[in-house]
Image 1 (tube, rainbow, N blue to C red):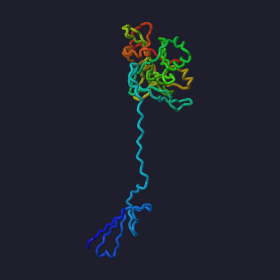
Image 2 (image 1 turned 120 degrees about the horizontal axis):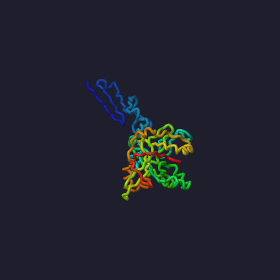
Image 3 (image 1 turned 60 degrees about the horizontal axis):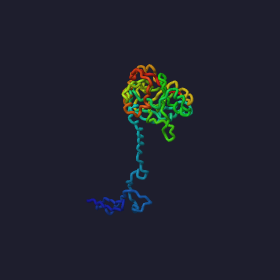
Image 4 (image 1 turned 90 degrees about the horizontal axis):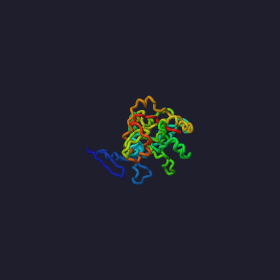
Length: 312
């Protein structure tokens, strides 16, 4: 006995039979069709009667192709760091404030103001920046026209001991009524909300330094320091002091707690003397970072610190 296999291809179909010689006249060949027939297709004839149809199409073939997973959106590029400047530490940047409003008609939303952030961790007691701007005595400020006085008052910082006020001038932007926070970074710092805490504070000192004329000069500087560790990516927050309360009442918000006096007293603050010298050598920021006293005084080298606060 021998077996015989007959294969006949009709496009997708094959006729296959296994017959012995003795049964060849008794058993018909049974066509075996691989694939299934769609009535709308005309490329292949229908299988003959009695054909066994085996569907070789996967069950997913007729379904819609699965969509390729969409990759998550790329993280937005971090804001650019502020350029190096002797009036501030490196690694700072300006971005939208993350202070959450807790009361009033905008409760639950962010403050909607620029804020000052750090790209690297800053330890407690570290220098952040000089508070820069135009310097005035109290009498000079009071003689400024009301429209300009209002703009200056929003950012004004007062050193009562020396009768000095410093405030950045709003002369940037298309309408020349915005603060250039790239130039005056410390002015971008916001207050913490009512349930938050400040992580920086302001202190002023008198520094004696040799000027470019080789003479000894005394300068008042207003410095921002950290009172607690600030992690990379966090916002720097400053309670402006009691003098800012009229503006808080006008806007309708409460500020978080300031750096505790006991904590400030426990910190050993670095002297700003080297930065004052760098500013004098560079020359470009001397007018808006240093206020020269008319009379010389003792060289405090940054050790005799006095409070500085926002005023109204």
